[in-house]
Image (cartoon, rainbow over all chains, first blue to last red; front, side):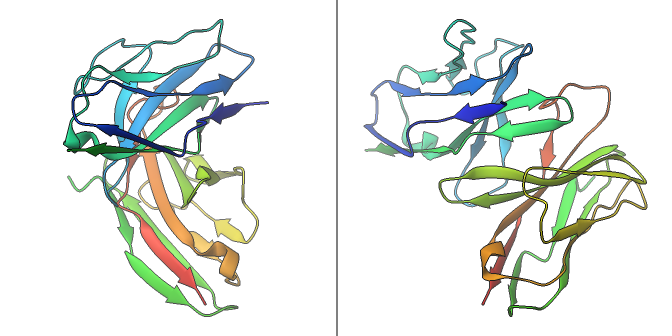
Length: 107
Length: 115
């Protein structure tokens, strides 16, 4: 089955603390994984894709095929990082989203 | 270049009513899709289209109908609205030739309430 699981509905941290948003996937083929971000009732924006191995806004994510994970990390959270984060799996013709994790960064 | 435009932004329907959510893109993207977003469930794919005249079902197609007569437009029709269809609906598009997730552009969403 093709599935994306984000186990945390809400993650609350203080400004300057490290952040890790968890994502696990289930897919029999070679996965294409992404992180999307949605700021307060705005449209979804692509944050990261595993193939490019880039760092955006200080966020990084490493694909671990052995653990079937693609966790999103940032060493020092900022208040402007508060948003909904969605992990997504790209399959043939479809983009499958996880349930989403709301990140709240407190001052 | 407006990207992906969704109308209306907000809508309240009575149970049993029908309506069409509009989605238009001006990027000449062949692939278009509709998602619904519900708390705790993420985004779920309703229908998608890989080009004009071609549509297919996603994860939650029941109660919805789509057609794709032009490359630019991909309307979503609610045949007989039910309270369970209260949700935020997002349209997304991307050009073909790119992998899933590459270059997806999302609309700003339609917030639908069925009473």
